[in-house]
Length: 489
Image 1 (cartoon, one colour):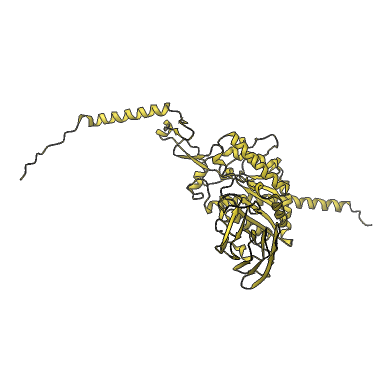
Image 2 (spheres, rainbow, N blue to C red):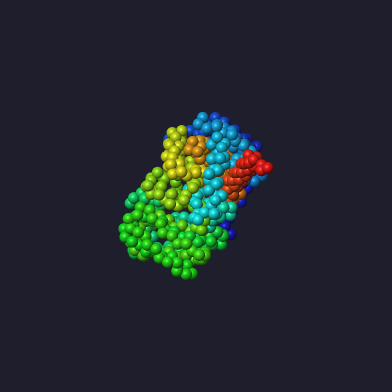
């Protein structure tokens, strides 16, 4: 057998336990000194690169991120410093209710004319409309569908409202299909390149290639009011020649003509009863199709109009005459404006903030010039990663304050989604509870439902106060009248 030398490994003097412990202690002491002396904000090497080192607090395990500690995600008091932001208006705030609507000068009568319109909506011959414009937080009819459901439950109405011929995403409320020759042109975002700015009420228009196209709609079980569609319209413009469009369901509901040359046109079918699926067939050279409406006979229609990636500054880019004509023809009474989230990551200075304020002023001035009630839903909490932790964007509270101030300057009402979520650093809590996704920006469907319920609960609370005030005023007037009538002898 070959000879094998056997030997025993002797421990090195450098591997003795005492020396190892001393070595580790030395390493931690050096790291501690570096962490203590290294600038907490890091060393900026260029505009896009900074050198950072963990802090002593992180090293010894102290969490330096102030995250609200709630038993569950709930509303947190609004910081007082965020209210006294301008000398144009004065604010009286109930700090115990951060999910309330915030009115200019605390004057809740600002919405009384809208509440009056809603009260009469069920007796009207046609629906009134509330347009819900927003960014990707409202895609798929999220948030809007909850607001619609509650408003239609109280004030009547049916259907899902305005629908694009070719939307970017499918809806939670209605199944929608289209022939494959449709194209979409939008004022902002992913679309074919538009050739003009006549985008219409939804901020986008669609047309089709060839001489025929179709659209079909069918309710989803999750949207009960979508079953009761009895009024269907096609909004169009810029037809180069007459176009025939027919509507059919289980029966044929007739054919209408889209007339050439109109900047804004509308054809409509009134159905004796709801049925599905509904199918529209177009024959002729395509005009621009601004929207399809799927409504009830009367009541209120709440329209979901998402503009993905937008900060809400594109409305003045839409042909103003067409936009105004559309608003009037469709009996629009109010706009819910839910933007700001896409601006937040890009606002890194006071100059950026002032630029965004200037843009919002232009949009709000447009809405008020059209006689619309303005309800602004500000951005949610949003997180950016800092030293392995997710924290609120630095300028987000400033964006919120600016949007509140600007809304009030134009007589609008503000709902603070950031405060309603819990304020600073509340987004990680929502992510943990599966109410927001792990981009720390967007809600899950459950989170969207929760935030919508918080908003509409506050809205309906103020409506009930209006009802009470109106009844009190009516009783007072009746009493004065009775007292002033002389008794017969």
